[in-house]
Length: 86
Image 1 (cartoon, one colour):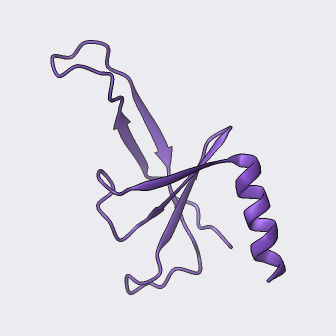
Image 2 (tube, one colour):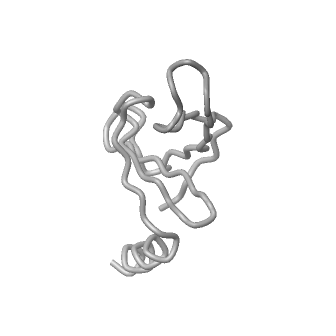
């Protein structure tokens, strides 16, 4: 799967942060859309790579609420190895 570079960061606030501004931490994920995703909104898959985890989501969903799948880097590498063989 080819992946297009993206400069957009999506920020997420920790669920442990309080609503009054205390203990706030946010993380940013740089999402990249697959070059195999159609431009008309179909088959859109995005990935965000972190040092130990790969996040995958459906880019047709709103970024702030889209469910994500998180897998280890080793599991992602195994998946890609399998997918490239087929």
